[in-house]
Amino acid sequence: MTNKLLTLLGFCRKAGKLITGTEKVTFLIKEGKKCLVMVAEDISEKTEKELRFFAQKGKAVVIRVPFDTFTVSQAIGTKAGVVATCDDGFCKAILQGGNTNGKC
Image 1: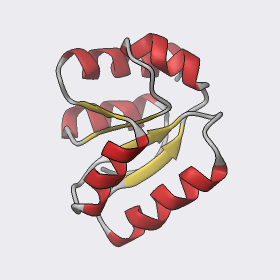
Image 2: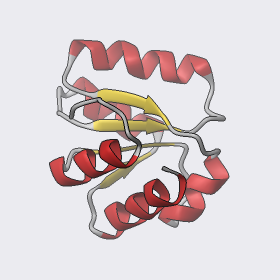
Image 3: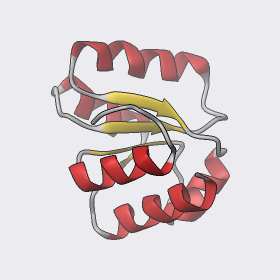
């Protein structure tokens, strides 16, 4: 999952399909958008808990990725520990690459 996920995040960013930052992602979730939210491993549990709370009311799926903020930021070219994509293709590729059974 490691290299493939980071590569997919980079492609997603270049394609303009990646939303970065806690505030933007939270707004997206509150709007009820169907999306996959990824939280870096060094983001606080409180932040993740808040994202999961809002996601339960909508259509978002929240996962914690096995990378710190620095590694995620290097992969996408901008500083971020919370990212999301609403693109079905990227969402499915990321979940399949991670061998998870989650659905977008």
